[in-house]
Image (cartoon, rainbow, N blue to C red; front, top):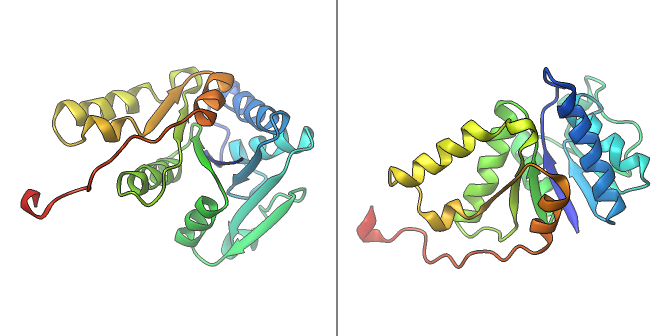
Length: 192
């Protein structure tokens, strides 16, 4: 099982973020799971890769050529896949993975997370998508997503596409035991 990891290219303000990223990489490798991530050696992304590699795991980076040119590619990866665009990057990462986990990050991390959720909502994949809620980082986002349901912009069945856990072992267990919700046709012509 390969796990796609989306997270920040910086370390954030708290050491707990980098610690969790490295520990996620280690734990995935210990459980025989491969890591698919963005490919650099910086920030939380580099910490996830380092953790996986330290434990002898498989770590595949997917990096746009323009970022490789900035010399941020991780030098120790099992494999580095070069692509032309950011969209190609997400598509390739999805193709190579069986599940998605997001750690703390910025706009890019959220964009990647929500694209994977949207693809699941549209039936383009049935992979589990999860947040590792390190130190409550995602609490405001989870409340906002719940507000989407309360306000009628998100059906509860689509809310159930997102797994949230503050702990790595329980998050990985949830990924391994995930059963996708039964989703009917996304939207009918009479609902437009």
